[in-house]
Length: 98
Image (cartoon, rainbow, N blue to C red; front, side, top):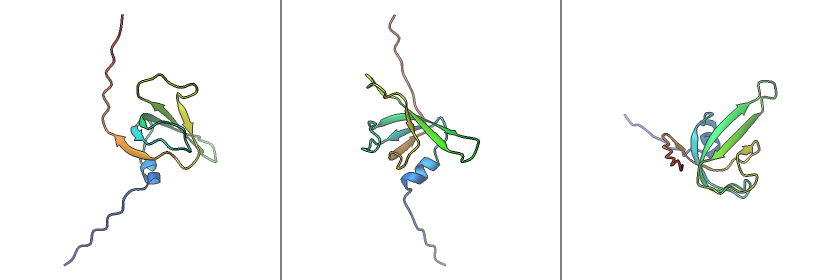
């Protein structure tokens, strides 16, 4: 008996299809989307009426200062920025100055 295992690396499209609204992911910046590489929280809103368009909002989670018109980004065009990795656990530490 023989067993063949074929490994096919995931594409950027398949990585985005696996994202659920509210997930955290590391994105790579691209010239098509002038966003810096980093950690983002991703929210996906699908319109209930046809043509069921999908809007993707990404909120950056890194130190500022933020540039004007940077926060958040709305993506609804392709190609989407490269999704490097989906984050399974994110800890956010905050210091409150009084």
